[in-house]
Image (tube, rainbow, N blue to C red; front, side):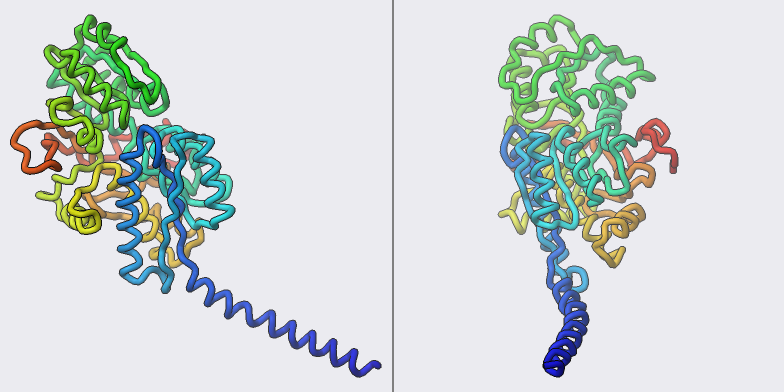
Length: 412
């Protein structure tokens, strides 16, 4: 009775030892076959859906580019797109699912100042890198920031500042703001006002409207009565389209220059030449830069090939850059571990589509150029040729809020 028992015990011991060794090989093989998963929560439905869909199209190009060039140690990348419905609660829920259910390695995305903060909070608590591709000032501030927080997009302080520095000396100092009543609008107004202080700009009124408003007729008589030199449309997506159309129809342009902190390519396409004629604004990217910037031409050609000859939008390009930066950092770090990849991202110098960029070390804000464009209605080569590039404000850390102001103890 003793012999079989000992034999059985020895068999279990040997078998257990084999089991202890075998999973190491199996785990290695499994790791090499496991895709690098990037969660991509964006508002596929709602007022910003056109911009979000372009973000997805461009992000998929970065994924394909990475995979076609061999991936990382044989591992390919995969984009997991989720609809955050432009709602902070929904964004947090989808992000939590991506991390805990889908086991994503990283998160890139967002198209709202509000949703990106909720996405960031979920990622920060779980030590998963989040690279935001939407404008926000708050995400760089110490209270919302972490080692795992990166911001590929421009921020309102930088964008509005560049547009204000260009527009106020040329078109006048008396300013009215028509502002979407949420973080994006508020932060843009603050950026204009700070840039305008040294230029003598005067705020006549900051008129606020709810996000997703369809009718601006109640605001326009007041704006006209104030007789501003400049009307600033501090809104986004369909809000920008609707307010630009109605301001044009009301005759505001007769005595007032209309500008926008972010003059969206997709909004201009949706609103048309007449509604946007002469409106000036800032952008992170315009495809027409390809005549002078080789990286823009290379990116545009890839996008055209994948999308039937269409050109990428400004926010689409951010989707591409946000994902490509993440995957390049994986290669630089030789790892998918968040902390190692974070360190690699902090050191990254890159030129994916618009010129040289890098992440400022104190807050992980991408330091980059701001493009000043004006909508045109004449001499267009084709339906994509909608803007004239008036100026490019070069990448410069001095145009950002200081690290100390943001609450970071270590400055660059």
